[in-house]
Length: 460
Image 1: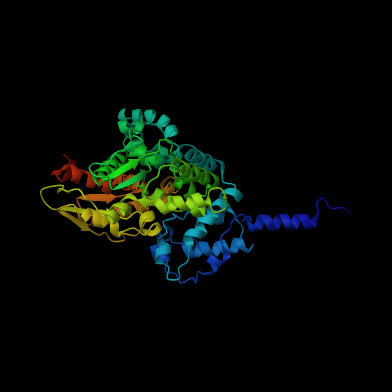
Image 2: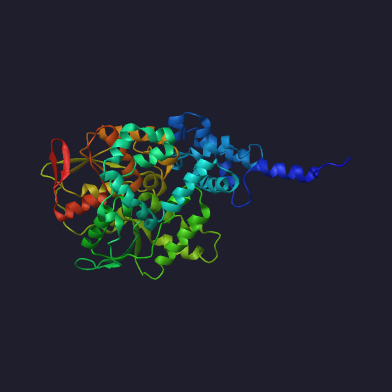
């Protein structure tokens, strides 16, 4: 009697399907084994705190990674949802007493999921939309004009009041809910290729414009240019630079990330700069990971190492080289301010003191610290779109913690955090402004005062 298939081949096929991870850089078993399952990570993990399941914690995910590696747990939808619930905030890396490199483990797992797991069609289409549009400013600008009309016509207010988008798709509703007001500056890049320093030139620096920030909050880049030039920096801005790859990297889009990394390295290849500066923390963390991202690329690995050696967050750079220009008070009485630590700044780049040092140099500034300062706000790249329920709770908590300090103003150095916090301030009926530290330094340098009228702070 003949069988329809070779039993050995069938068994091998089943084993491969069950194993889930392919041989291309799976999570390192050595790093997995370094976890002693002590549980210190649980209290700092935002997804665990909201969802409350062990499998939605770093410790639980490491257990799942080990099981998939060993062929004991399939890379099934049930398993993948626990990896997807991770915000990638890296708070567990900061907290872990054993030094477990969870950042490397989750970064290795995400591309495996994208290669070996078939997502439902609606989810697949949404992800294709995000990664085909968001990292490309010119493509985004095509959408901005109808979106601007949608806002100004009053249609946005009507759509939000009816609430039907959430019934159609929670993810589409979440995407619409974080849409900031579209300004005229979003439609074109106005920063030239070379901006001279004011006064004596101290440094020649490169500047990365970002993709989402240059469209949705272009004032930050303009302020950054003014602050740098006022402090003796000549700025080089390669006009062909694109996305740094952060959005792609955080969601396991491996080949797209590598393409963006190579393009960014090439854009700055002949710039002859002392430092390459970035003013968005999520981008900064990925830029500093280029050598790891391109570790298997013989043509770009050394170039990536050289590039990474020059990358600095703009606050990190200015705190190191020092401010040379005079700073003026932002109002005629003490200004109570709270600085919001973006996860990829605090946990990824280990930068927390430098921004505070800069802000405290502004006369009259009083900094307050919120409770749970290290807890993610829920933005996490596109997490607040893909997982709106968890992101909503985290955003609510973050805004409550920030405003409970009694601060008149929130300083935030990441575009995703800015959008998420602004949304939840509005939902809670609070009018506390959210500004980038570079904007605050810029106002201080220019002598622009922040004036308070009826408890609302205005730029005057």
